[in-house]
Image (tube, rainbow, N blue to C red):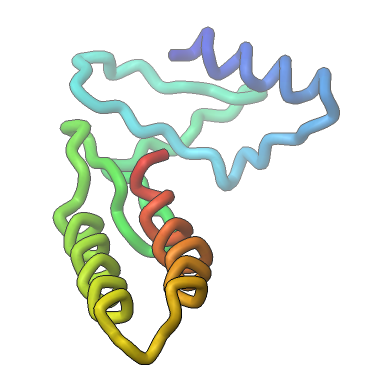
Amino acid sequence: MQTKTTGVASFSASVGLNIHKGKTKVLKYNTENINSITFHGETLEDVKSFTYLGSSIIDEQGGSNAGVKAGIGKVRSVFLQLNNSKQLSTNINVTIFNTNVKTVTSTVWI
């Protein structure tokens, strides 16, 4: 993992991207490796889960959070209600789907 981290840092620098050491964390899952990962001589912080847009996406065991799945269920339920509504045209439903449902659920598939 140290080799990959060093490689990403080198490539990023070569194309003009800077990695913020304070915002960079390490999540190890399903591993016995206890070695620390360093970046420019500083040890990166180990974390137990990864959170994106307020939802825990993955944990140390590599599992996804039930909260994410519940969020998808809520989005699906609301969209089905809108889709079944006779007050909205198909074009409006497609627009709502593309701008809201896809953007919310896409964070889960990353």
